[in-house]
Structures are given as structure tokens and as C-alpha cells.
Image 1 (cartoon, rainbow over the protein chains, first blue to last red):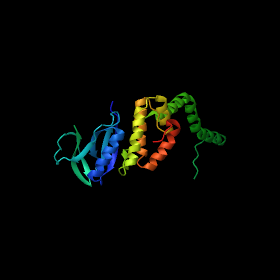
Image 2 (cartoon, rainbow over the protein chains, first blue to last red):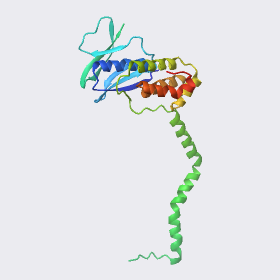
Image 3 (cartoon, chains in turn brown, blue):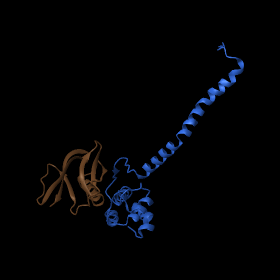
Image 4 (cartoon, rainbow over the protein chains, first blue to last red):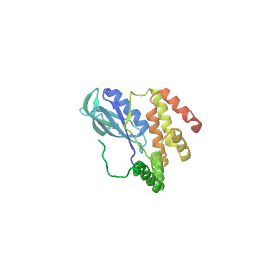
Length: 93
Length: 140
């Protein structure tokens, strides 16, 4: 059974800081299952019933090309440095 | 101007007494009549408050944790995820002031989330680790 928990991340974070937070929380809370925002902050949901994944997720702009050897695992709209951006989460295969 | 309701003077005191006592006596009667139900309601509320998994708002991240703090957070998470002793999980949850969990899996998740919520720096982890050391017998 899923046990989702939500984390709020400031909208001012750079993509690098945002990725750092996502990866740090995933190591503790479990797999990232939802990516979005509430109009003022970014909201991330993690499923605590799933063990932290061996390969970390990386968030990037949806317009950027996916690096080879990775697969898209999640999509969402998040604030990156205050700007609403379409993003995707990729994970190494 | 005084209104005369036609009541005899000697009953005024009795009427005032009845008016004054009507509400307190009614409420007291209801409380006495429903005392068992009120007791059960209070007990049910207390149990619900102790066992309900209530969250108010998301966990707010102020900034990424330092490498060292994150390594300690991960060590603690792995320790809790590997812990199979339900009594110990419940003892840790109780020490952290968490609601009573129905299953060990729920207790495990609540403890990890409480740590994620309370620990973002090395100082936070020092305090957190110290708080549960008498149960875990180790530092994180």
C-alpha cells in the first residue's frame, strides 16, 4: 500500500539546489511519485512504502533532450528560480 | 412603571428561584443521564487522538542538507528500515512523541518522516540521536 508524504520546496531554488533536495529526500523518504506546485512553492510527494531507489532521479527542463541510458519516470510543472517550468524526472536505466 | 402580572406577592421569590435553577438543573440532569455516553465519547476521542495519523501541511525544506548531515540521515533511515523489533519501533515512536502506530510498517514510516521533518542539519541530528540513544544504543 502506498504511503505518500509531501515535501514543500521554495520556488526560488535553482535547478541544481532543487535536484539536490529531491535526491536527498528520496534517499530518506522513498521513491518520488509526484512533482508539482501549489502556486507559491514546489510540492514533491514520496512513497514511503517503496524503498529509496538505487539510482537517483534527476530533474531537468522538459525541453532539454533526455541523456542516453536514461528513462523518463515523472513529469510536472515546478518553479525553478521563481519561473514556472515544465520539468521531467529521469533515472538511469 | 411597574407591570403587575397579578401574581400574589408571596410567590415572587419562588418563581425567581425556579427560573434561576431551571437551566442548571436541566443541564445537570442531562449530564447525569448521559454520563456513560459522555465518558465513552471522551475515551474514544482520546484513543483517536493517540492513534490517528494527522498531518498538517507538507514538510517544509529550507535548504539542502550538508553532505555530512545527509549521510547521517541516510544511516538512520537504513537502521529504521532494517529494524524488525516492533516493540523497539514503538518505543522510539513513543520517545519521539508520535501517535501510536497500528502496524510496525506504519511506525517505521512515521519515525523516518519525523526524522526528515526535524533533522536538516548536523546539530539537529545530534539532538535527535541523543533523544533516542537509550533505546537504540547507538549514535547516528
